[in-house]
Length: 380
Image (tube, rainbow, N blue to C red; front, side):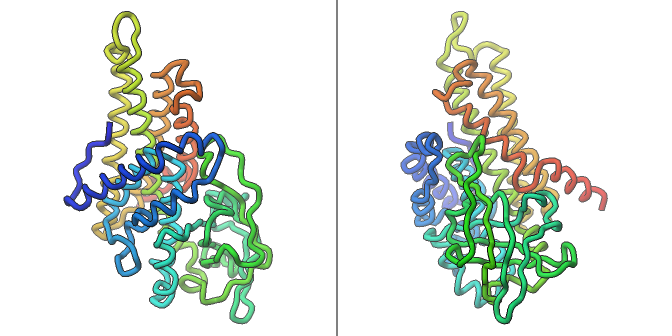
């Protein structure tokens, strides 16, 4: 059953219905086949972009919808309920545009942001490295100034849309001054020397391409640096706060879908003379699953409302990411249990949901890192 939502305006309620209609028509019929073939659904992103669903939280002057995060995240949750792979992709695209919007000059934003938000371009975010996942200040990829250009050399691991994106938001070291020596660049995909390694062979999110991006003397005009030299890590971390809310919404959409499949199965499957949802042991399990989904949604919305009000929300974003992804792992695992042996087969989607939930506890900062962020926030 669809999530029950209390939207702030009639227009935002209409947006949710539009989103449901689009994903029902364009995404739900094809996602199982796309996942089975590990095929990247580029046309789906174009469709979402043309409907305005890739640019919801950005201002109308740049081609966005100017909507609050409270509304954007609920639309994202609806997309993720149909496809976690696409939901993650929409969140990553929004994150890829974040640095330009928050740190770019007026000229940079006017030149590049409208096209990035149009849906015709898809973004990727290059922060992590093989040896520096949870510790971005340890990155080794370098950007050396050469006249009016920077020359970038190194490799960026775990890049969602790697090899498929049209532009890459890249963090690279411009000095040896630790976390203060990192700068941010906007790099077009067709820049000479920029290539993608073979896609990672993952256990889930099969239709979301993940690859290491290789930078071999990639020459980027200095005009494509966002912010001043050394501001890259603050730009990245500010973006991650918003990105964590995106992943929280995606995880909640995935958990809602797993719950819906489990309920539908439990209403049809009979054992000992009655449908299994009427057996208290299983009914209570479904009740716990429903409580986990509802509490996850409330948690990310509380953080989003702080962001919309212009208040600090970093700790709450980490709480939302941790709670929503841990709950998604629990709900999808329990959905497999509800379906029993059938849940362990690929005849039903819950085994895919369980595989997809696992990585959400890892990317955008592992849940152990979220606990570190939360505890440090409490100590201040």
